[in-house]
Length: 487
Ligand code: CA
Image (cartoon, rainbow, N blue to C red; front, side, top):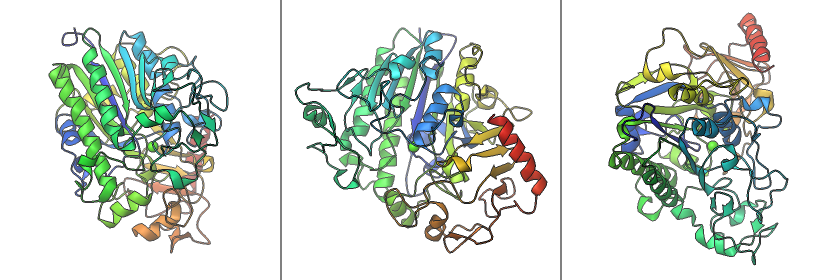
């Protein structure tokens, strides 16, 4: 049935913190990504694709709901282990929309949208609502993020290997913890048996194997696999066989493991003889981060966001411009590139279009059907504006044509000046990277820097020159547009 059905299977690989410069097909030389490059050679690469946010959780919210995360109160940062599900189960999500079209649906990888409906989340009861209540038939993966407790796998509603005689207790450190002892996190301990099943170094292997297993089970239905990989979020724990294979340390080794995972999925689609009828998309939830591993990689000559300015968490391009590659044999011309402005928030409307559905009233209010950009050559821009959310609500920006407006100074991300896993970003990062910006001197904002920022990305793609004070009318126009778009 898969080879003759009218609508394609969809596999959506959603990586974590993978930057615009992290793949060899986007210009990286210190890592090699032959499998991901193959998607590009057989499909279309986008040069102006964006996440809706520069942070994990709001970006995932936007992907699944087609709604700007700024419309959802307080959804600016990542959820952690105590937070309930942040998506209203009454809202149409990508999973439910695909299920409505008759697809088998699975989410395998990193969830990071919260579980349950009480705070703090009770990890000793069935974890719902969660992915299954948002339309996924199956969930397997890590519940929060690879750098943060609880370090367990969850399958559907349950912690894998859960032992009621060894319950989770907030504030206790898990005995079997390996990489995280010194990070001072808000621990959840207990459930020792499940911790024994969780090994950071086998995370990529486990997720890839489970995705392959699920795909092989889909013999009779069209399928939608949402594969949010924990890669390449720190703490960079690739399997031993990938360690030392890149030229930029663990950061690059984690990219190599990611590329292997993508290859496993691609090989499986070919073995199943469904690759020709599958829309395969590979992208990321936000830009690359200048954490400790990223700094080591940078020193080795690897620039995770290419020449873009800024990093994960920032309103600058490095925070949210992402690699985006799509393959759909017979529909997308191989080896092509597109400069069309698109966003991951557009997947809801686009996949509805691909599967012949109309979105109901109120669903995906900010999602635009960009199928024509995937498969054709639009005569006019499909998306005129895009609201972009960094870590700080004060820096909610708007893209309009070639213009990017940010209503405050700096990047709006983490701004501490010290080197470290989480803290190195904002203007301070310019000292480390050597990137110029007219508002910044010696790693600090100039005393008389304009109060906000305006860039022309066509003439100045790396955001060297803030035009705010030179073009007050353009600033005013974009201020009004931002207010209208987020009203
Ligand atoms: Ca992320």
